[in-house]
Image (cartoon, rainbow, N blue to C red):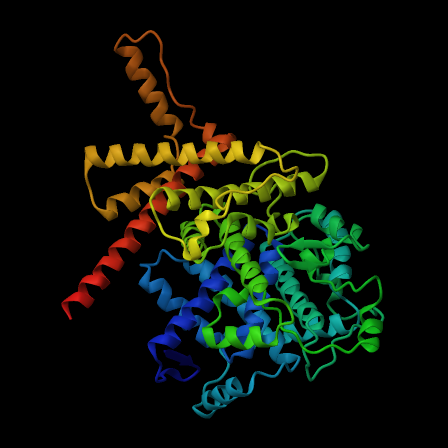
Amino acid sequence: MIRVGAHGTSREPCSVKEDADDRCYLQALLLCFFASQNRSLVATRFLVESLLEMHLEGFTLADMEVMLSLARLESGGRLVEPLEQEILLSWCAMVMLTLETVGLPRRPYAEERRKKREARGEQKGRMELGMQGFVAQIIDMYRRGFDAKRMLLQQSLAQEEDGAVSQGTSIMQQNTRLIILTLEVLRESHMETSMPLSPSVLTPAAGEESVSSMDSDDEARSEIASSTDEPSVDRGGVSEQITASEEDTGTPEMGGEPMEEAASQTPQEPNPPVEYIFDFLPERRKAEVLATQSREGRDLQTRSAALHLLMAFVGAHLQLLYSVQAFVEKAYVCYRQGYTVQQLYEAIAPEEVVHGTSGALPVAAENPAESHKANKLLFGQWLSIVYMTFAQMGAKREGGAESTEGWAWIETPEQSDRGVIEAYRLADFVKNTLRIQAETEEKEGGGLEVTRTAAETAFFEHFKSSDEVSRMAQKQVEEGTSVVKVEDPSLRASSPLLTMLSHFTGLVKLSLDLLRRRQQQEMAVSSTTTGQ
């Protein structure tokens, strides 16, 4: 692996396995980052939790900068835009500087690696040095009582007074939220730090008045209003307390008691959050986590796999090809490992699928919970589409899981025939899409690259521009056609149904493309082994 320090570039001996581990951490960060661009506060929290794990493992901002730069070069610059790369690195810097400032120790073996880098003269970069003062100021505000709920209240009031905010103010708001969310995660997980983190009674701190709005007034008001505990939600064997404040801000709630009182009554062991990042961890670290977890290992694995899919699903609705491909690839892994769609579907709470102002589709409902359920249902349909494609193409599953009734679709709450009917409709859709694709390939020919191009086009297809449509209509009129039938250039943007069908078609074709590539790789490996 290449390391970049203040005095240039150095290279440490690194195995292929370590490079693969680094790529897994990078994928975890990218999926959270892309999903957070769709205004998913859950995704922002998972990004913080991922950076916490990377800090404990000894990663530095310089490591992440090199990992991201190399990945971008390998993708031909398509992975992230230069501005996106800069924003992601600034987010990472905010979180990691916060962890260092409060004195969160790394694991012993990770601390040794850090000391070796310091001995070679590697120092903090210009970005980190410029952010230190801001980070220290927000931490001081937090220790004075400026926690997540108070931040939301103050930002909401400031938004109402000031209206639109400048780009610089917006960046400061996001950075403030990242720092406070990091501190909240540390408190919730009972991580030991050299600096006490329990907020005291709120007293005005310098710069506190400059913090203004979050993503929207509605989100802030929702957070403030949700101050009472709600019933726990069973997520596929993982029973957790779900409140709006926990989901969006990380504010801890423990049976209605203040955090300080609960902590003093029942001291708890440090418990770094790993629900999301677990699926990306190296095997060594996974074994360590499973050895210390009180819950069943399969429950954690299912939950983490489902969150992996969820982050890819949320990012995919920003038309990000990286997230779409990550969804299909992870679904293939889950398919091969014997997970059912229902298991993964139940591991996600409806509140976690919320993003943007209306979720995956513009669902109108008086009760927000109904919109949450609709978006979660769409998540389940995506999974079913991919699973059914693999099944109809003959992909094998482990443990003879095909004998499990209904393994490729989600059940309806009332246990009626509605779920079975929906499953047959999706299966027919997959079958017809595969048939049309096969007929097209037979006529036009082409290899795997042509197939992949067709798959990507299906997912991100757009109608022709209005100018092109006008020219088509004029040409048909001039040729004597009395009835002119043209496409509405704004229909796709305004029709959720067409958007959904386009996504379904793209998922089928991307799944087909992935399966063919995997089969080709297996054949190549088999022929190589036979030749030896």
